[in-house]
Length: 171
Image (cartoon, rainbow, N blue to C red; front, top):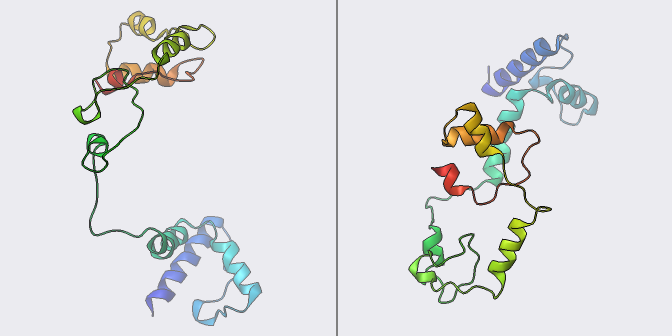
């Protein structure tokens, strides 16, 4: 018994059992690829089979489309922003200060940009104070990463955006 036959039979048995139907397809050795009716029956029997889908992805789709490299090239944000790769750099940081890597200083702000940020963040039509702190205090919860994330995940109404919460979430 060839491995392909055994695999096909396992798939057919499993699919028939799962769908609670009698077998209505030929064995693999009797199946002709040009027989549209038979191929259609096999397709409808096996199209939802997790085993068939996994086999196809792992043995056909992924090897053809997800080429692996033997060597990984990586760099941190600081390295990418340094003068190692580029003599001249332009970019955006969510940190409006000169607390950037030394290769990126001095930070040159667009004139008026800090004022625009403040105006936007204090506009009641754009942002509202979060009840997060009051909710944590009312529950007797602590300001922990888990406590903050739990409050965000269960908020009603849900949050639309979190602004500058990186340090709070990462601890």
